[in-house]
Length: 154
Image (cartoon, rainbow, N blue to C red; front, side, top):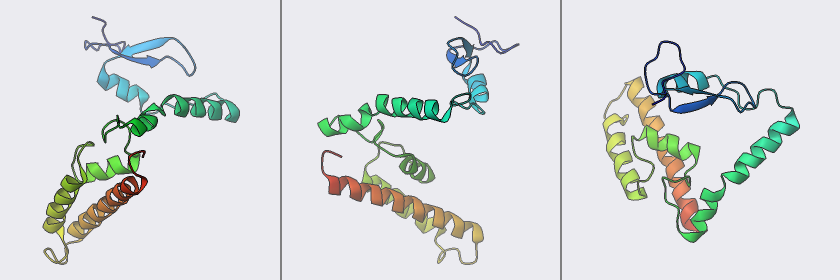
């Protein structure tokens, strides 16, 4: 077992992190120290605008397989077919990424009833929470509409 490269840490070091931008050399941190190390990491540091654009295009090309797999019916909600906005909306509703829309609607109604301005008049925090839930539901409903409109290839 390899130990974390952070001085004084006795945890398992199974999270590789580059020692410097564009370097093949790696540190091996525990999960906590890897998160701390990567917090301020700039993946494109030291690259020109053209090199950064080429790297971003290469990453997008390499990671586009999830989107393409949806054409064959392999994709589900938890494997890359949800956008970052959808995932944030699901977090606001405290739901998993692979839930169906009926579950989303049920959770939204239950949470919205708890903080509705008619139920808690004058409560600014409840109004803010209600607004957050409304926005989350609108994002997820629009995504569901796009999926239904696009058909099985989307």
